[in-house]
Length: 267
Image (cartoon, rainbow, N blue to C red):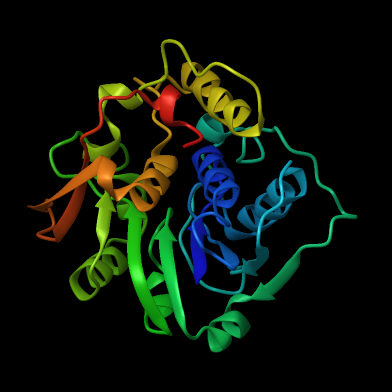
């Protein structure tokens, strides 16, 4: 089975990617694809961040391809107050000697066939084109909000950047939505204490926390990694049907386990 991650490489995308790749083999994935999209950063920065991240991973992971989407029209911001000057916490140095397989989006899309699991962690501009190919066995995304206060122009950030693609996707394809309502759970808020211990993922998460004090955010939630948890551990969540302010009908995940984020960070 193939795992496809669409990431707009900010810090939470980095944490989510480390988490997913760390467990990919045990989860039964023989191949992973990182589609570097625009969102938190422009697509060209997202692409470089994906390659830098892979170069720093301290563990073995399945065959992985990075998909270059820079030729595709897509929205983006540059949220350096939240994600650092390079968009990924300024934690990683480029490694030009590190060989990463990179394919242009159009070329990769033509080759996409068979069964896969899709995890979308950024704007959904390119997601309908992916879902139209092959057979998606499960589709989980981080995006949208129901009752929680929005965080970008009256919406959740990923939703706000491409509302049309968001609406098209959730209407047409079965999904599990990890919304702001899912993530803004007090058990996931690490702003007060951070997470203890060493390792790359903990360093990424704690850097995300440190930057919330600069950006003035109320709380620190590792949004995209909660989507990884919902994908990997569906028994930790229950789902319910809800309608957002645009009338989109979502199948939303709600965390039902009693453990805080610091205790499940690498599980």
